[in-house]
Length: 227
Ligand SMILES: Cc1cc2nc3c(=O)[nH]c(=O)nc-3n(C[C@H](O)[C@H](O)[C@H](O)COP(=O)(O)O)c2cc1C
Image (tube, rainbow, N blue to C red; front, top):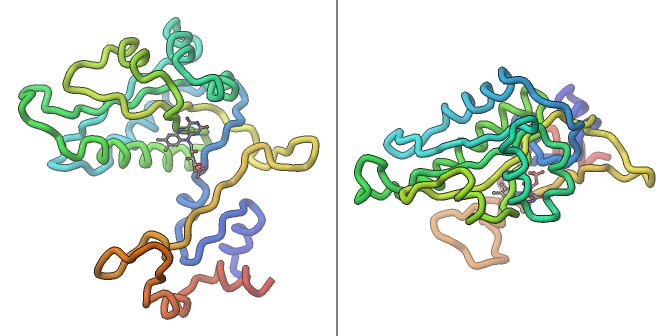
């Protein structure tokens, strides 16, 4: 067993068919956080990672509005969350609202067609940097969009995309009393479900390439099958 696959099997439950980078497989959305704050340096490093995302015409149509737990603005951000999200966000260090510029701030006639898409790329950059820095990032759509738009003062050319929580991680392998993981590790659809050769195939039809692809499988999947 290669060092890569050994580490893979021991430290998490995500197994990939191809040799996907560890950083990508290790990104997840834990809900467990210690309640500790995170430093200004750590926070700005995450936003700097977001800054380097690609965007159409390099417009960089993203805005990140954050409230740290110690700030007087924390309560208004927190109150806008859904009840389910409030439960675990109570131990977050920072709440962030991602706001896109849907139109050019200088010219309201000019729509930025890919603004939401570009924001997604920026958020993923930030999330991957957080894995590197051992911080929790957890995205949220469960919040009152109108309330948060007022709180962070969203302008007519802008749109609230999502919120996310940042925090210090509880050790990933921490378990509940019954032995189950506190944070479930999610898996994904098979490649065949969303990769289409030449044209979109109806649901349930596999790529003609899928058998051939198995010959290129990574050591990770080979080891998984052998056990
Ligand atoms: C835009 C967005 C909104 C989300 N909204 C919520 C949410 O409101 N509450 C929640 O607990 N998780 C939320 N999630 C987390 C997803 O459920 C999670 O990313 C998904 O199940 C995949 O798991 P993983 O991130 O651990 O790989 C959201 C994620 C994204 C990207």
